[in-house]
Image 1: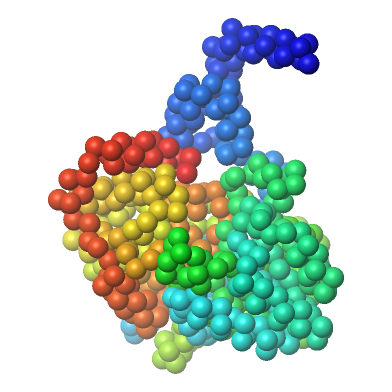
Image 2: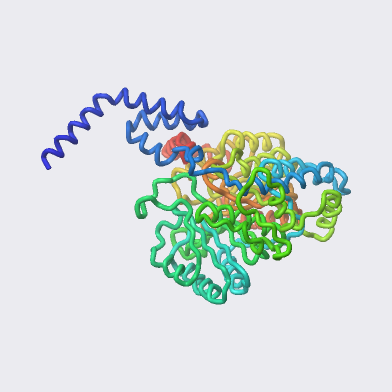
Length: 528
């Protein structure tokens, strides 16, 4: 024992003696070996300066760029599914301009951008229900699960072993007994406290379980970044859910620490459900290694219609056409008529957009920016975390200074203190530009979305922060529909009755301690 202590002291002495050179080498690694935003680089260099050596270990845990390793090989099937989007993109060129209702022309570029960059097909036959209360949402979900006939696909960032999940388990077991295929996918970080016996019990009942980025050593999760933050449920290809609710008692307002949990979740019927199904299938394939694209039944195809994607082939252009058939997309010469019919029949046009560290662009963030720059009257934002990058912040400030009513709603209580105070810091920039800011005081606000001019809305799993834009796997629904957007805006305006406005004068009067917390948190914002 004495020898071990002597050797440890010797190693520690050597490290201290050569600390300057070690820090220099580690700084070179951070600066030159990975391409990062300069602000993030400077932040990490400061961490390394103030916490030598250990700061680099923290860098490896929080910020190692795994997407350049084999961990994030581009999902081959996803690339091939873009082929049908190219077909629709060509058909869309000019179709919006010929519509009698010209107010949609501002958003044609956004539709084409989503098609071009991520293959997000515009679906035109959807209906949307909105849930803002967790109990209502999960009551509806359990009712639909009980009616499943073919398959149930469930994906949540967080699944906790409490009364909510325990109320869902019997339904899943019963459906599995009836021959319904049940798959549950959860994130290794979000589900880290789930007892293994529960997953074993579900597997023994015939339910397939997948874990995204499992822990390396028991429950020790070293990958803080690159979490799968998506919340998707698809039932029989007919009903899809996407939004902010996870599975846990706090989401049904039973955690006294949070009180009432105010969130937003969408229930979709129509072809957009298959876009959610594609997203689930890609994540499931990555986590479990089961290629769901080989079976057309998951995408509404009969055996006669089925053309499985199978293994990717560079010269195979027929496989991607599965997306055209499974979504029943109109032919190019029929797309203008389809858009008119959707508008007249009050069907909802939706693009399901996704982003993550495996993608070359920040899809959801760029959607927000397009919406901000095209706003004429107002921009309403709800988010639990407001830590934007420079481009998003500049777009919002530009809109506010141009006379657009920019209105931001955030929680009044923190669940992550550093993020909370960074949010207040960036909120000050908006106030200085003339925006209105509100703190929701009727519990905890977890809704994540944007509404613009009563025309277009974008809701889903992504927060308005750098982590959602760059580091997490997210999915949102961009909704091109006045009625749905007006309903979401009406809910937003109702929420304002439970808010406290944070005026510019009130913000300027915050005490020194709050200012210190804001500035320290803002310095760390590239890491949050």
